[in-house]
Image (cartoon, rainbow, N blue to C red; front, side, top):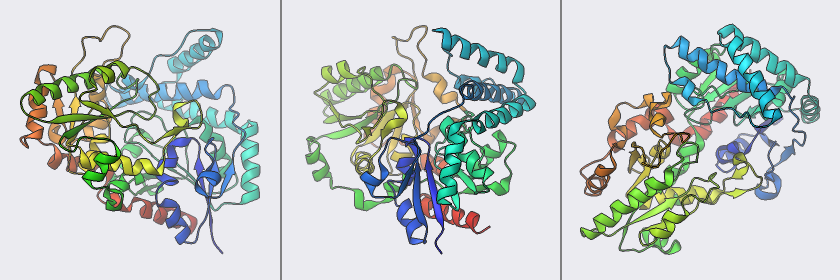
Length: 465
C-alpha cells in the first residue's frame, strides 16, 4: 500500500522548492500519494494538476501574534546574552504604536520581552503559543482534515508563518510524524522558526550546527542534512538558451556585455535604486572608455514600489529591465507566487551576464553556480537620513560569518572605487568565484543537485520508523 505525504504549504514560500521542482515527481516515483495541504490562495490542482486539500480556516488566536512577536524578541535577547553579542537585536524591526489596537499589542509585547528574556521565559512563551493555538477553530478544523485523509507524514515547507502552528500541532496530537524544511540561510539566527516539528531538514552541516545552537530543544537525531532544491535549476543545462536566443527573446544588443543588478526588497535596502544608478554611471563611464556594456535589472519579486522608475527612465540607454516571472495571487509579500518559467529565466540571466551587483543577497550563490562573480555594495548613500535603515548592518548579520573569508564576495566600500572594480571584474583581474564556491559548499552543501532526492530519503526513513 502506498504511503500518503501531506506537503504542507502554510504560505507561498514553499511552492518554489516543493511544487515547481522535480520534488513531486520523485515522491510519486517512490510510490507516495502526494497531497499538497494548501493554506495559500494558489490553486495547486488547477495550475499544476497536483492533488490538494485546501485549508480555508485561517483563524489565529488573537493573542498568538503578541506571543510570537515576543518570542522572537526574547530569543534574540537570549542569543545576545548567551553568545556575548549585540548583533542579534538588529534582526528586530520597530513595533507600531499607531492606533489603539497596535498600541495594545505592542505594549503587551514590550511587557513580555521585559519579563521573559531568559531561556526559561522563552520556554514559557513557547508553551503558551501552543496552548493558544490548540484553542482555535483552525486547530479543530485541521484535525478533522487529518482524520479524514490520514497522511503518513506532514512535511512543512516553511517554519516561519504563524499559520503553520495549529496544523502542525493537530498532526502531532494525532500521532502523525511532522517535519519542516528550513528554507533560508538566515532563518535560524533570526529566531524565525515558530513551529516545533518532530524532524528538521537543513541545507548543510553548517546549518545543522546552527539549528542545534539556536534551538536547544532539538536533538541531533531529529535533523536531516539534505541541501535545498532552491539551487538545483542552476545545474540543469536543459533550461539554458543559447546566448543568441536569450538576447533575442529579451531584445538585448548582441554586441553588448551585460551586468545583472539584482534588486532588493525595501526593508533590506531602502535606497536600492541609488546603487542601480551608481552602477549605471559606471557603465556609462566604461562605455566612454571603449567598452560596450549594459545592465539587466532584475527586480525583487516582492518589491511593489515605484522607487526605481526615475532611474530606469534616466538611464534607459544602459538599463534593460527583465522582471521575474512571478505573479500575485493575493496582496501580501508571501502571496506572490513563483513560476516554473522563472527558474529558466533566472538561470539564463546568470549564464548570460558577466556578474551580479547586489546588496547582501543569496544571489551570490546563484551566480557562483554559473562561475560568475558577485559584487556587494557596502557603502552608504548621501540620501541616508535618520529613520532610513542603513545597508551596512546587513553584512554584520550572523549568516555572513559563514564566509570562508572576505574574498568569498567582491565588496565595494566606496562609490568612487566602483568603476575601477567593475572594470577589473570585466578584465578578469578580480573574481570571487574560487572562494565563493567554497562558501557555496559551506552554506548550500556539497551535493546541490541531489537535494530533492535526499529530502525524500529522509521522509522515507521517518515514515518507516
